[in-house]
Length: 142
Image (cartoon, rainbow, N blue to C red; front, side):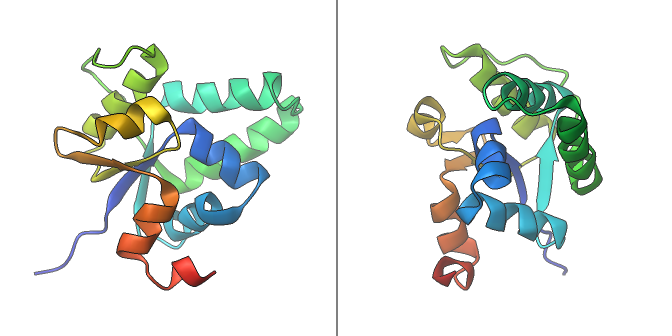
């Protein structure tokens, strides 16, 4: 029986960190690019990413489109049908919705409210370092 690759969703803060700062979040994007894990996102989450890059980090539209194009090439885009309202911060619920719609094993995030949840249904919620340490021990040395 063939092992299925892990399915993960990276919260917007992880994608921002991967794009701007590198480190463990960028290692996760590399694993997705190399097809060692399946990365999942949704149109709402990618729109949030574009919004943050534009407003908070003053990225030009051309640069935002470049990153969105690259992400669309490597991520599986899901369209959640069910609304979830378990967290106070509504945008965090969009992450849960996409994780469930994408049949994800993990949500990778730095968000305190999501991390406090630890797990939602079958989806475990971890920081990028812990995910890499558990599943990709060789990466933790980088």
